[in-house]
Length: 281
Image (cartoon, rainbow, N blue to C red; front, side, top):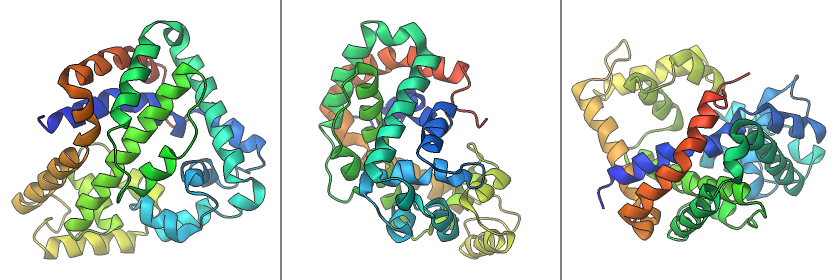
């Protein structure tokens, strides 16, 4: 299978799961547990994504989330497990996903496309291996939800965390730190600006500029943080490795199965995007 299939299928499915990081319904559910999100917005992200790992500390979360600073993780987990258990957070996350998908996708959730997509996505997820994939493995141990649209949401979560674990492996092989990976991502011009990524990952100007200088010293960036030819080669090598490492579930499904899954989930992803489901409110 051409590794590009893993990228195209991931992109087609991603909004259906990733809206959970932006949905006000999820934030409301976390607040109902006792998290003061006005004082600490990071409590609306770190505990929910980390809860599958258990009541873990910042060390493990910093390692597995990779691109965030240690300070961001410590702040985002501050008092989290004293306020609510991981099990309570996971249930709140699932309730938030249910409410958000119902709002964004409406009647699309009741059609025949969702059960068929669930069957295909679960087949694909069955091709994932746990070795060296900590975030995938933790989420794979969770029980499957009862409702079909939440089963689809969970299956896509498994597939994205599997891909993410592989992406981190590709970055580590290239000798990049989490901060350097963030700087390289901004330099690639794919999505995030420096301000957005530096702010959400909580790095100081001194730290960010130091990483730029270090990568410039390696010939990867120019002094003004633009990719050099060597940097473009490095970035592409990481992307290609990520696609290859993400192939096992899609190989299990087959090219026709992947194409059908993209076709089925496409309208749901479009509804999420058209409804503003990937925008910070």
